Every structure is written in structure tokens, then in C-alpha cells.
Image (cartoon, rainbow, N blue to C red; front, side):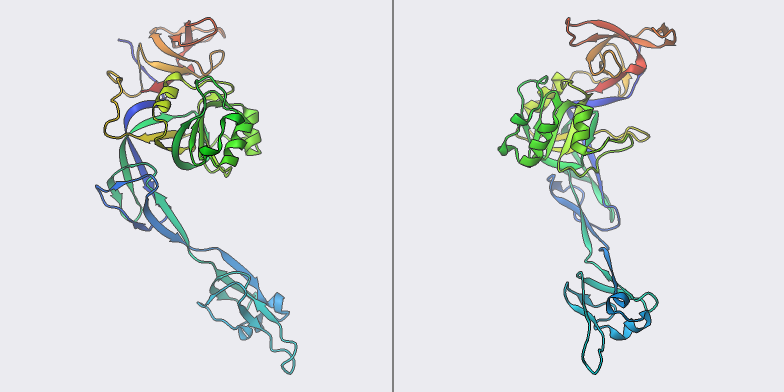
Length: 379
């Protein structure tokens, strides 16, 4: 049988998911191999140095820098609180003394007789790594973190913004082609992962953020709405660090584009279950896709996926998404893989394939497209 290979997104009702969870610097690992963890459990912890607050004592006291050490009321290594008096001039005959209160809490790290500055080091900042998903610790990375493994529902999106979050799944619309509007967001969705259908409007994002929603998952978003939400045009390198108070994942692309029916059905079947979401996306070297992960439980139905194709394999019967106009965002099934290159409308030659589209205005339709214009949907 003809076969080719192409990159793709995974939409799976059952897969083995591994999350590698690591601290940015060396620290303490709090779990052992075999331990069962919940998504919100802290599995590793460390501390990084606090912020430095410079205090220009010479300037504040109106004295030469070389006089500052003799006017200190604290010494290197002392802990001070905000408002504590840290330096005082002698005044004249005991009168006219000038005092300087500490502008911040911290430890006296240094005092320079050259610049007249004191450096206060703030309290160490705790850094914690959570498990992210319910599962089992299968590997411990000494002094750094651990690997969590679970059988899961796993859905990759096209693009996301915002970092990791966890919350119960709530389905906000009745069909995968329904827009997610502000009216669909309710007060009882606080902390939830809200699933829409097609386009997410900027008003819906603002309503969700005001309601305390943890994340939104839907088919698409208009670029103007995305710019409105962010306040700037999104770059093309990597996302996930945006500080907008909510995580957003688009499963299909830009515009008023419906979520794939199968993806919507999978998410709907797990409504109420806790989902882990990460909007981080990288589309250059080291591709990273946004994701939704739902840990499976004993007793969950086994999906009837049949024989699984070789990873990355493109065969007759494989489900694909078209990623170029005029069929951008449409889903279909590969029905033919011609071996010879075909002449395109531009006059150039390219390897092509034939796809039976799932939905068009006229119903199912067979189209011929370059193989570079499709993306595999891995099951």
C-alpha cells in the first residue's frame, strides 16, 4: 500500500502520556519512583536568590561615600525589616541627626565606601514544580525533578497562549460549530477549563477572565480578537509566557473555524473531569504544541480506535487537516496517494494526494492537494 510521512497533531482518546517536570536550578525532589501524584501536588522545590534593593546612603545622608561605613547601625549579614533605621548621621553637638529607614526587608549584602551604596538582598523566592497531571512517578531526576506517567486523553492544538493550568472541563456550547460568546461564560465556571466550539470572541475571553476561568479551548480565534486580548501582535517564535490571566488553546486555527467533531466529542465525554492545559507553542525548530491532557481512570471506556498506524505514516484512510487555502482548516480522509508528481495550477510539479473532505457547503467532496498542504491528525 502507498505510504508517506508527514508531521501532525495528536487527538487521542487513550495514549500513554509522560510529563518531564524539572526545576530551573538544582533543588529538592519530594517524590520517589512509584509514588502516585495528583496534578496539583508539588513534586520538587528550590529557592532562588531574592531581589536586590540598592540604597544610596551617601546621597540620602548628604555625606561623602567614604563616611557611610561609620554611620551604619547595621552590619553585613544583618536582617532588616522595612522601616528599620539602618544609618544615622552624628549631627552637630548631638542635634540635627539624620536617619535613613530601610525601604525594603532583606539581608544587608554589602556596603561600598566607594559608591556609598548599601545592597539589601530580599528573602529567597520559592520555586515549586507541580506534577501537572494525575499519574505515577516513573523516574526521578536527582536534584531536579521527576517524570510523571499516566494513561490519558490527549489533544494537541494548533496555537495557544498562556502557561500551565488545571481545572474541571466545562462544555459551554452545544455543537462544535457554535461560537464561544460572552453570554456562554457563567459565574460557576470559575477555575474551570471551558470548551467552546468555533471562534472565540474577544468579549468571551474578557468575560472568562473576569469570571476566573482557568482556560478556554475552542476551534479558532480571529487575529483581530487575539490582538485585542493581548494588546499587541503575537510573535512567531514561542508562546506560553503571556500574562493575561487565562490560558487559551485553538485546536484548528485562525478565523471562524469549527472544532473537529471528534475532538469536541472526546472532550464532551469527559465533562467534569479535571484537565491539564498548557498553551505554550513553538513553531520553529523544536516544535511544541499546546495541549489538553485528561488522566484516564479505571473503568473509563476503551476507545474503539482499531489498528493504529505507524507514527507519522500517511496512508489511505488516514485523517488529515488541510492547512492551506482554499481548504484551510477542513478535515478529511486520504483516499488516494498518487506516486507520480502532478502539475499544479501554478505550473509547478509536486507530490499530491486525494482527500475526501468531511464537510463542505455542498457536502463531502474529493479534492487533490499537495502533500505539503496537509497535516496528519494522529489518533
